[in-house]
Length: 266
Image (tube, rainbow, N blue to C red; front, side, top):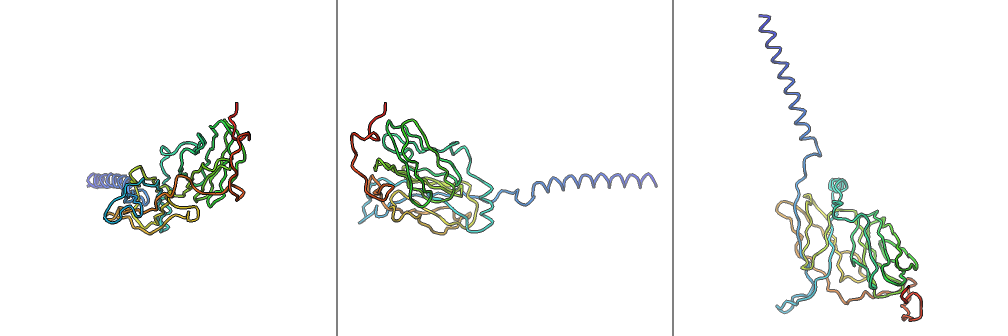
């Protein structure tokens, strides 16, 4: 009798141990926040406004366009803040290189708080500045082979120019979300692993003027049966050069051949 009782107690103890272990393992699996949220790969395509008129399609270059999503609900904000964009897609120190009287690349997207390097690889001086919404700075004159750094510490769109060469322009878009993409040559955009939810879609394109530089916005919902941005209509690029004034708010002076800032340095 005692032996049978002891046997039943032993079986009970073993069962409890096994259950405890299984429960702990299950708890690790289903702990809130560890389950991957439902996500979708979101696609869109840029279309130039007026590209189709009178039933005929005009073949024009599609302006480089940046789109990004900002969550509307606080839960989605928390999710995005803990899932930064993969560092493999971003250089250790982003650069806007000055070469051949141009900025390379012309459009740069960086996370808020990033430092961007501005190396001068031309054989003459440059004076990089920005006086627009986003980041205001003036790097002053600096010679060939030198570089300057700027920290873009808040979100916004910064138009970058050179105070010597009016043909030089670039745009730095500073974001607080990793959900963004830059259109390819065909105007296609892809945002991977977008959690289901409500978002504000922001659109900036090269066709937007300095006077109307704020991104276009509209609300969208990403769900299992709704994972497209739809057509993204943007204005055509009005010209090859962005019309702007120098850092003093005046028209640019005509180049002076004897001025040292235009002469090639030995």
